[in-house]
Image (cartoon, rainbow, N blue to C red):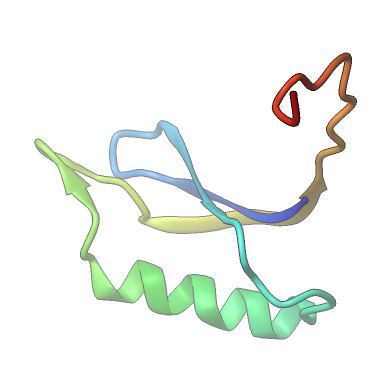
Length: 75
């Protein structure tokens, strides 16, 4: 499975991430930056006094692979 992981810095200086499971593959840097900036500008995500997504820091695709050890679901 491929996930788009977006990293932001919050208003208290902590790092926060937003992981999108069904993002389009092969997005350009500019497209992702623009989308992240819209998230920042919306100021929708807040916990207590911390604005979670204050500054866009990084974006990357993360690919995970499942390695089945056993599967008894078909028995």
